[in-house]
Image (cartoon, rainbow, N blue to C red):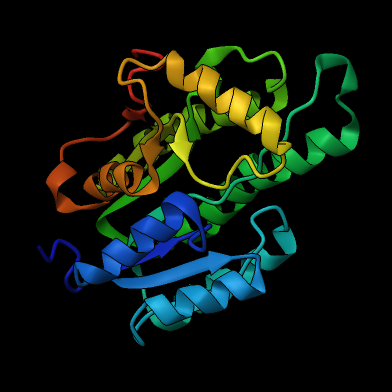
Length: 246
């Protein structure tokens, strides 16, 4: 298939997990990718996996000072047909352990960064473009240790609906990918034993009794980014194996 032939798409957080799987597939389907990430080695690895037409640049979603540089790069390359706000940050703390740094770091990467980036990129979206935000089923699970992270993903859900209303007159669609237990390195902050226990527990609570793959989650994001979903906006698609049964 060549669903993205002649299209230009920006994928933040494209150096690992779902974003990496999606960026590679977009390129395979003819799209021109602008991919971002923070890690120098992973950025170079991404560069090796994408064609020469791709633009790879360092960008920290939690650093508002870097937004202008990314926007200028987009202006230099050309307007966007797709925007996937995928970059994010996760950490866990008990309710009585949350401090200002934990809160500010999470909000900066998961809420403030996407909001400020969207404000500057909205004028650079072509008519009929598609925007996808990567959310999390944590917003519904009520996890005792994930209150701030879950709150950021709940905020993204509200933002996606408001943006869908605001941009609908330009035929720009905005949808949410609600990722559940996907087998990536996103939970790298957890100790190995704790991570194994967490993943075993969450897997047991899914209808399909397994973790999903990054490629399976990316496939849904790419459906939303493609013209195949041109009458879908303001929606959320759970890729969670039936964990929350939305």
